[in-house]
Image (cartoon, rainbow, N blue to C red):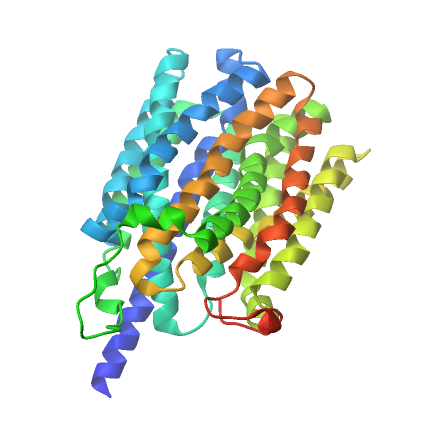
Length: 406
């Protein structure tokens, strides 16, 4: 019994540590995102120019993500998150002063930020899957709710900094210091991934190379689902603020509050959505949410009044909430292949999460950003065709609507 108590205590501590990793990542990213309009104005960037600048984050993450699975397999989730939190803090320091000097230093800082975010994301999702298996119930969306809660916190603090006239430099330097100290301390209770993998056979078997997971059809289809939802989430993170300010001639504080509304909606559904997944299953829930998010985007774009645009932002955030965390859980269905498959799905998803916003900026530069966001709704509706890939391994078509764990 004492061993059971100790195991439960370890799992509880690991769950709390995982929340720390997700909340920290979300708050760090939103801290930067909340100050994008001020950085844009300082450098006098057009929408197309800003889209190219944001591409630096995508490049950094897309370099880190494909090999993140091998890094996690080699060094473990705890060490990966610890190191990458410090690297991310360095990126924020470079951004906080670099944007005052010009575009090039800003690009360097964003590249470092993107690289750290990419590897950090895979590591914390792999550990989240380990904790989910140990608990024996769905909890991954709640970890991502932690990420969203972090983004809400970061956005609200960002709005306060804007309202008080605090400079971007002071704001981001403070965030960098907090991240560099709090995250390494907070993730010390991560579980050992290798110790949680079941022994499936007494005969030694050759383990497929991590890059071989890129050839698996199911993994790639899960990645496409992650891509559509990540595109919707990333576009909201980077452009919802600016689209409301420019498209509705609103104040910067109003734009930041609309962004916060989007984040609050995501957080609420991620926190309370586990029951929906357990009751109805992954596929039906995500189909409904994709439609809800698409409706929200359309309402946000075409609303005649700012309050209705806020409602659109709320529906947009609500609908996009579970797509990425459910894709992570689906990729991690088999413990032995979890790190490599999560790396693949995260790479595909982050391609949209990070490269999608620059595409919106490019399209906005040839029209307007608000109308360019309609591409978000289109991709969400297209994702309906491949959502069957999210069914747990071994589940048949006849059980598609059967409640499943995760």
